[in-house]
Structures are given as C-alpha cells and as structure tokens.
Image (cartoon, rainbow, N blue to C red; front, top):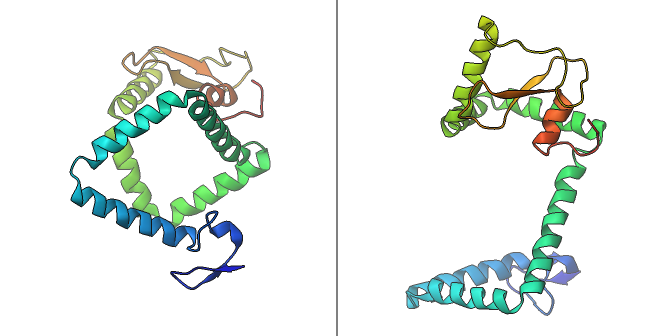
Length: 185
C-alpha cells in the first residue's frame, strides 16, 4: 500500500505510475491541467505536438507497429473472451435484455439515433422485407454457405443494392461480421 501525496488516499502499488508519488488519477488530472495551460500560452502547441509525434513514429516504426499489434490483440482477447462460450453469450444476452427493460426510453432513443445514422441499411432491410412478404423474393430453406437446413438471415454485402443478398444461417452470418469465433460454420 502506498499513500498518494495529492489526495492522501492509501492505494495499491498498481494505482501508481513508476517513480511517482501521486496516484494515476491525480497525475492524469495534473497532466491535463498542465496541457490546458500550455495550449493557452502557445496557440501552435497542437501542431508542434503532432509534428513531434509524426517524427517519433517514423524513427521508431517497428516499436510503434508492435505496440499497436499488441494492444489490438489484447483488445480482441478481452472483448471476444466474453463471447466465446455459449454460457457467457447467454449471460451477456440476459444482461442486455434486463438493461433494455429497465431503460426502455433510453433504448428507444438510441434506436432512433441508430436508424437515422444507418438510413441506407434501414432502407435496404425494409425493401427486402417488403419483397419477401409480397413474394417477389423467396427465402430459401438452407444457408448458402454451409448448406445447413434452417431459416436463413439476409446478409447485404452492398446496402445500395437492396435486393441482392446472401442467405446465411445465424452462425455463418455472425462469422461474416466477425462476431463469433468459437463455432465453425
């Protein structure tokens, strides 16, 4: 345990940067306040900082690339670890359902925003739905990728072509979007 000089709280060693007496929270607050002061004093601060970072990245290309590869891999591992097993997916789905019931108004608002943002996607989905219900397009009884007998979902590769879809089972569809890693289609 270590005591922070700023906030006077006792915290674990992990909550401190190496060779600092302030905890990470206090240190970051100090850094952001310092940056604001510097920006006010020097109007070209951001341009200078960007130029410096650009030069550093060019000099240390291998170091920079390995850092980003490592951080992306860590992000994938943590995000996908939650969805790998069926039990974890089930827990996650239940939590989402509970949240939606609890926050119905907020969910409606976010859905409105999403629909407005994804106008082309929504229009393509609506037009395809109408075509299927009117009988212009027939939904097959099997996945076009793995040939599994099921009620397949429509996958648009190009949303500007509303009626050009690939019919995929749920697992193949999720694989296409990179949301499922543990099951093979």
